[in-house]
Image (cartoon, rainbow, N blue to C red; front, side, top):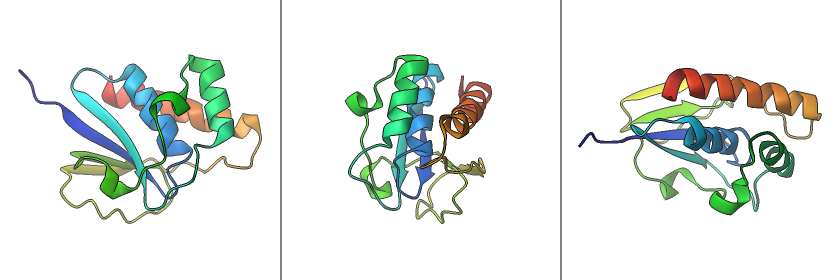
Length: 129
């Protein structure tokens, strides 16, 4: 049996981009990966615009299976993907890290959210499926 690889999507508040990436990772990711998201801080809830749009576009209710988590609340990651918030992740045991350089759409229009969601969708499917 092949061992699964832990992938962590890291952002500051773990409320928007990293949560979207976790949801889409779980949707598209192959059986080789387990997906998590976390932040250096947390918010009381996932960004409601992200929740609404992911539900409309993919039928995924992020609030049903996800919540805002700190980095030390998730298993050790083999791959760390930062979302573009210049976060210095305290996770040092990972085998590989990359930064996706995505702007935070929080407080912006649905169009801005859709651009970020589309970018995450493309990156997940090309990298992890």
